[in-house]
Length: 284
Ligand code: GUN
Image (cartoon, rainbow, N blue to C red; front, side, top):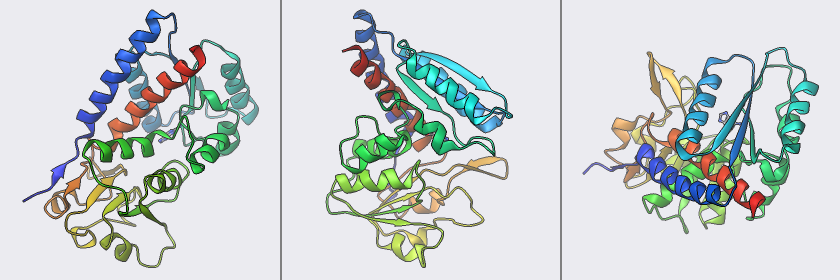
């Protein structure tokens, strides 16, 4: 029997409905939650992601502001813009879209965001709180992975979880979130000796490499009855693809996410949730 397709679009819709109701309540109390995004340069993929975030905000009743800087913007201009948004009481959440054009320091730019407006959960303060198991605002993609696993009631306590990614956006925060839920977590990366061996013994595999010339998660690398979450997104013959061979894996795994329609919509839903939370915390 094939496994269950974890439907990120459907679950994200449920989350967004909940946020919309919460936002309506805030608006009735005179708080208008507002997200400000900062996009530097003209990368079409980043522009499309930012457009998607604004569209989702509109759908949930969250206001949004779209700040743009040219590819030649300086670090000072970028951080100056962030500081202005920090000081603007009508803005509750700030997101600097990554990656930034070459020459700009993403860590410094993100670090300039006030932690209580850090709806991306990427500032050092947020990362530290997450490591301590006390993050009010956690990064959106890992939060989306956790929400999806929870929706489908994938057991995490005592489970072997393998994350194939060690970035600050995905692998590192996810490591802490899974650990917080009592999973035994292994983080694989480009220097891991035998990624396949780790994946094969995992009850939960989360993969986020995004380059099929370097890594493909095949059915032979997945344990019978495992849950497989594919965060990656890349183009393959003009179509979107993740790291995993979904059609093969769903015949062996208990749960798997498709690409597209898996984690992507969940990331946006978690951004809405974080923005509503930040507004709620600011507005009392
Ligand atoms: N680029 C890809 N994913 C993300 C994300 O979750 N946040 C930001 N700021 N940039 C991204």
